[in-house]
Image (cartoon, rainbow, N blue to C red; front, side, top):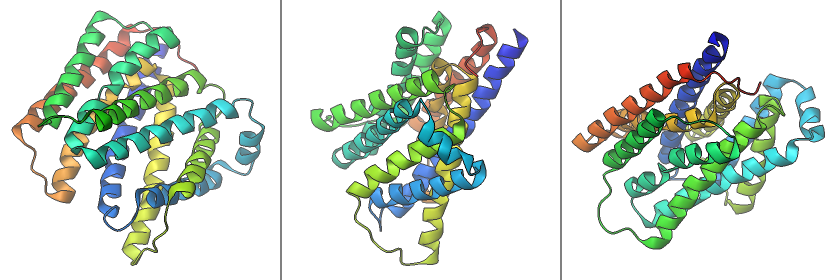
Length: 292
C-alpha cells in the first residue's frame, strides 16, 4: 500500500512540473506571436521536440514507434491535443483570454467525470469538493466580464473537452508504449498538422531563433513529465492539478509582461492552491496500483 501511495506522489510531482513548464511555454508563445504565426511556432517547437526525442532516446525509438501496436491510439491522442489547442486559440480571437480560460478550466472537472465512466476510477466526495473549489478559484482568477458570444464560447468548451479526452487517452494507453515513443508520435502529428496550416516568416534575429528552439525544449520537458505523471497517478488526480497553472501564470505574467495580479487573481490563486493540496494529500487513501 505504501509503495502504491509513493508512486502517486511521484505522479503529483511530475504533473506539477509539467504544468509549470507549460505555463512558461505559453508565455514564450505569447512573446513570439507578435511577429510570427501560431502555426509556425507550433511547427518549430514540434520539430525541435522531435529531434530531441530521437537524440535522447536512441536509434531504436523510431523503429519502436513505427512497429508499435499502439501507434494508432497515440496518433489519435495527438490529434485530440492538437484540436484542443486549435479551439483554444480560435476562441481567443473572438473573446477575452480571461473568458476563454474560465471556460477552458472546466477540463479538470470533465476529466474527473470521464475517469469514472471510462477508467473505472473511484472519486471520493471530498475530492469532488476540491475539484469544485478549483473551478471556483479559476473563475474568480479569470474574472470574466461582459456578455459571452455563444460561438467562441462553444469553441472554448470544445477545447476543454478535447483536452480532457486527451488526458483520459494518455492514462488509458500509457502502459502500451514508452514515453519517448509517445513523444515521437505526438510530435510527428503536430508537425504534419501545423505544416499544413502555417505561413513561414523568417526570424529576424538570433533571439527569435533561440526562443523558437526554447519552445521545443519546453514542450519536450512538459510532455515528458506529463506522460510520466499519467504512468504514476490516476487521471482524476493528474487533471485537477492543472489548476496550479493559474499560480504560475500570475508569476510569469508579472515577471515577463509586468502584469500586476488583481485581488481576484490572488483570491483565485489561493483557492486553486488549496484545491491542489487537498487533491495531492488524498492520494494517500488510494491504494489501487496504476499502470506501469
